[in-house]
Each structure stands twice: as structure tokens, then as C-alpha cells.
Length: 204
Image 1 (spheres, rainbow, N blue to C red):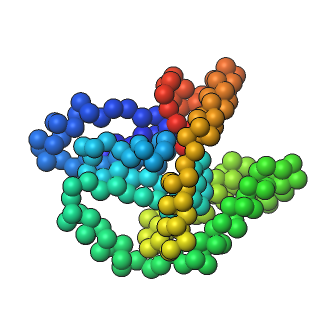
Image 2: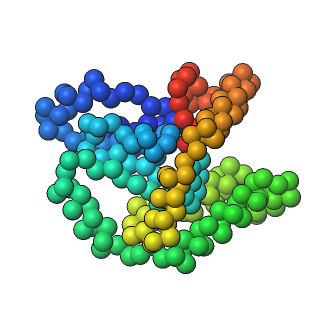
């Protein structure tokens, strides 16, 4: 499994033949390094996984996509397992959208930030811990995997499709430039940013 953490990607081509010769499946986790629908993973990988949760730049609020290559039995088995999951209903999806809208309000306004600070102190949590917990929608200690064992509802699938079809590469590049500026300023101030030496990266 190759996980491209903190938006830092690398070419796995040199090792692909070695793994293929030994019949070792290659799995790619691109949850933190999405750069657009045209970059859908290495062609030598058995499967490549993307996620579009609330904390991602190209958010779809919830859900993800897995690209499966040249392995119909694997696809059928995965589909069979997913079909056995409960449905993530439109009502559940609507609730997540409202939660995300509220979060965006709180973190982008002075009054909202003040209210979040008070809520964090009352809960006994650090500010960052409180923000992350709220945005992800699950609490430490909860069953992590079970939180994602759902079948996607039609609105979720439609929104993911829409976001991929309407992906704006120029806007995405503008986002990346802003994050580079922020990373450079943090680094100069002595605040460590993982992957700061990488010149070609994304920011999840």
C-alpha cells in the first residue's frame, strides 16, 4: 500500500514490475493528495482510493471513490460487500451538509470563532482538537471503520459526479498557490510543515 500523505506524491513506477512479478497487489491511498479527476492513480495499481469528506478541498461533504483495474472478481466481491451495508440516507447526507455549512460559518467569522473557543473550553478540549472532531464527524474511541460502512445514496453519488465534471483546474491551482504562501510563512516562522521541501505537491 502506498499512501501519499500531506499532499506529497511520488512515482511508484520503478517498484511496480517487482511487485507485479511476485503477484503482490498494489493499493494506493490518495485521500490526502487529490489533484483532479484526470489524475486517477497509477495504471499499475490494483486499486486507487480517493475520499471527498468535509475536510478536503474538493469536498463532497461525505463519500469517496475507488478505482479498480483489471480485476472483475475483486470488483464483484467489493460490490457484494458494499451492497450488504445500510444505506447512507438522503436525510443523513442533508444533516452532514448542514453541519458543514455551520462549521464554515463558525471558522470564517470572528463571532463564530469566539463561540467555538467557548464551546471547546466547556468541553475540556484544545481548540484544534475540537475543530477537527467537529469537522470529521466522529469522536476518538468510536469504531472508525463502522462510521464508513454505508451504501451511498443517490444525492451523494450525484454530487460526487457533479464535482468531478465541474472540476476547475485553474481554481484548484490558485488554491495551491495560496497554500504554498502559507506554508512558506509558517516555515520561515519556525513552524514545521510536513513535506515543505517538496516543490510539486497538493494540499488535502
